[in-house]
Length: 358
Image (cartoon, rainbow, N blue to C red; front, side):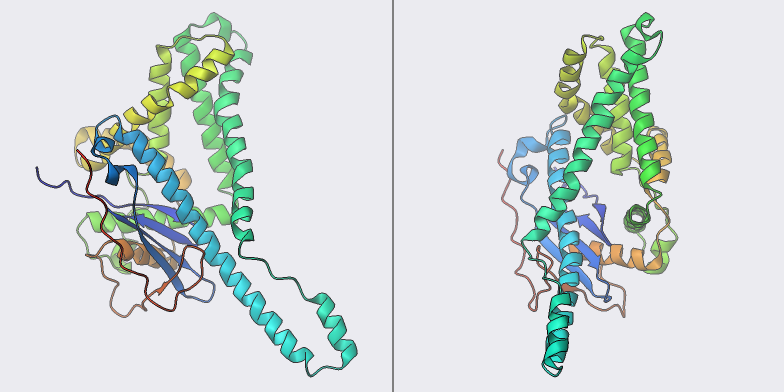
């Protein structure tokens, strides 16, 4: 059997972009000093270790877990790069202050020492990131799982509707809540920048998949929307969940919540196959029809990127795609470790992934 063509995917990061290849992933993060910090590591997920992980209706959940794990790792990398740069700047300021203090009178030296800040420890960076993520996870569970099904019980005259109508209304409430949440956070400047990097990732991949040379000028002409986006997966996930929920009735709230959680693997598997089909047959009529709702929803999660953001996406793609060289004249990036520290030497070569078992 001929090897299946690989389709690159990615994710927006804090001042950066992550790209995933067949057996490696890479990311590029732009530091404030203009340095382009990149990382390239091997992928050792279930898909590379077990043949069954590629089976239809199983690969969807495997891909979901692998994507979540890789997404968190890449987000931590971008966070670490930015924090490490800030720590470097603080160290330089303290060294300069210490050098100045050596020439100051004793009274001035004492006053300056009191004003100096204690530098952050590198080990604190992970705790800071998790502390920022946990409230969001709890908020997501409450807003998008618990609240929608409870709201249906509180809506007047809903008791007169059958289980099909209640499940449909619950899905609409859940979708409306997600759309409202995305629209609200998109007003924040930092989130808007992430959405711009999201658009840069899509434009770069669109340019590559159309067979064009991946340059700033070419990528600029492509859409920031893409049919394989995770935003489209979210919309298809909700639609499939409504269809499956129709066959589950409308039991007591505790059992309803249990069923909502228990059917997540099935819903994710079906939704993945729909998105996968649309991405691999994007020129077919069926795929175009299926892609339209997701593309419409992506208008909330993407923004038109700047040239600098597209450059970051091109750097990220070039780290995982050997066939995508950096445009002529671009400065080579600086390799960085997962903790965000810049490396003075090139990282070791990425080993080949293990052969999948039959």
